[in-house]
Length: 382
Image (cartoon, rainbow, N blue to C red):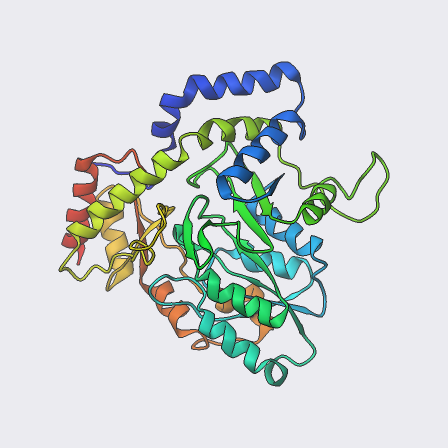
């Protein structure tokens, strides 16, 4: 039995007519760049995320870049983030001319460890002379929020901006001391990706920036359109970071089904967790499951830890089962970041995760037979 890592055709089938109708409306209007379709989608996603403002942009990567640009972060500035994430998180910092500074992850959640951030800040002058700490980018990895109360407390104490990388976590909730909060609603900005494989995926690239600050939102809107306002008058240097209307139309249709898809993923995760109980397979923990939130995890990925991970992966591939490694190399060990001066062993939890994690199919359209085949194959491999 073949079990793909992701089957977008299964998602598209039931929505085909609605999506095509929404796209036809854009085609009939011939309004492809920004416009009313994008504005409507921004309002819908702002409400969904619990943010006052949402600004559609061209990708999740560009959401990070434009957030840094709008906050004036550049050369001489440092941004604290995790070494265990997709490249775009750290690539955005480098592209803005700032310096990424890494803090190790929590081994349970794979998210940045607030204690590691606190340790960095406590010894900053001794270790990072000449760099001014300006921001923290926590990544809500795999669909579960980082410990935002602790991170926001550190940010307030040290006068730092917080840019939430919620590319994998739209709709996930965190039990803040102020009540349940959704990813992207707690920091200075929240950044989302609509890459097709995300829980809310478009028909190509797309992204979003959320914020509670109306003035910052207006700056983001101006910067995404080359810093232009009014037309052909430029008060700042921005970029071409605009969300296409066709993408907004597709995403608006899908947004109405997103919580049901999240629920399907959590149901599949519960099946895996039960099936792998009392085996050498370590399943992910929903650390906020017993709190006040309804969506403690949205499982953009279902990540297991297994001994001899590469051999297990090879066995699954041979059995026709899609699986992948997110991520095989911690970013401080990537060749392009060698100039930062880090070495193997500097972030042991991130490095251990890179050697052990394996993602299994988790999309909501999986059948019981497909999941049973995945479980049997993993257990056979180990």
